Length: 429
Image 1: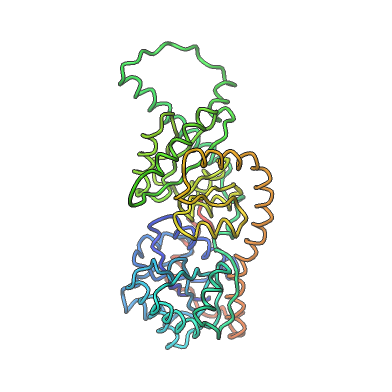
Image 2: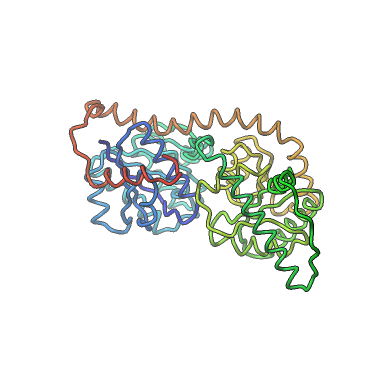
C-alpha cells in the first residue's frame, strides 16, 4: 500500500478546491488501488468527506510530522498555493512542510500545480529555494513552467501536464440528473411567479388542462436555448450587474432561458439575487448548495456558460460547453486562450450590447466550438492523467521493490478511505 501526503491549500470551502482534490485523488487511486492519501488542510473535517481521502490539520505539528514520517511520497499540489493571492501564513506553512519532508528524506513531487503570478521578491526567492530541491515538477500550464524558469528553478525536470479536473469523464454522471434538476428549477420559478402575481392582486383565469405532450414540452423548456450564468461579488461599482441583467433580459425576450447558479455557496447567492431583481424578465435560479455532481449535470444542460469564476469555466469545458468568461483576473483570460474558447470579456469593455452580441455569436458557432473543444479535451485528459502517471513512475523508478509490495496491512487511513470511496454518493471514484 502506497502512502501519500498531499500538501496544498485544499479546504473545499468552494467547489474549485473540492473538484480538483476529488479528481486528483481518483486519478492516483485508479493507477494505484488502495493508495492512502492524507491531505493537510485547515478544514480537515470537510476534506475527509472527499472519496478516498483522509485529512489532518495543517496547523497541528504532531499530526503533520506523524503523517510525513509514515508517508512514502509527498505531493505539493493545489492551484493557489504558489500565488500572490495566497496568505503569507499559508505560503510559509506550505513550504515549511515541504522542507520538513525533505529533511525526512521523502521524495517530493509537485503535482499539476499552478505557479504565479508572484510579484513579491521574497516569495519568488522562497519558491526558487524550495523548487530547486523538489524531485519532479509537473505544472498545469506552460505559463506556470515559464514562471518557474524565470524565478531560476532549474534542477528538477519540469513537465507541463494539465489541471487534474480534466481527468473527469463526463459520461460517469447520471444522465437523468440534469433534466430532473432543470425540471425542478422551472417548477419552483413558476410557483414563485404565481405567488408574486397573487401578492400583487392579479386575477387568475382558469386555463384548460394541458395534454401530456404539451406538459412534456413545457418541462423541457420548450426547446429554448439555456444560458448558464455564474457570478461573483466584486468590490466597487456594480455596473457589471446591470450589463449582465440587461443582456439577459434581451435574451429572454428572444426566447432564451437564463439560469443564475450560485457556484460558490452561499457567497454567490446575494449577487445572483441582485441580478435577478435588476432583470425585467423572469429568470431561473438555483438557491440550494449544489453538489459536484449537480454542478456538472447542470453545466451539461446549458447551451453555453457565462462565468466569472475560473473553476466553473473549467467544469463547463469538461462538459463540452462553450464558455464566455468575464475576465475578473488574468487566469480566466489565459485559460480560455489555452483551450481555444472564445476570448474573455474584460470588465472595462463589459456592456449590455457587447455582451449580447458575444453570446449570440458564440451560440451561432456552438457546434463548431464544441467540435473543436472535443479535440482539445482529448489532449487535456491525457495530460491530466500524465500527472498521476509521472508521479508513480518516478516513485517506482526510485523504489522498484515497492511495485509488488503488499506486505503492509491496511491501516486506519486506508480502511476509512475505502469506506468513503465505496459510499461516495456519485462523486468521482
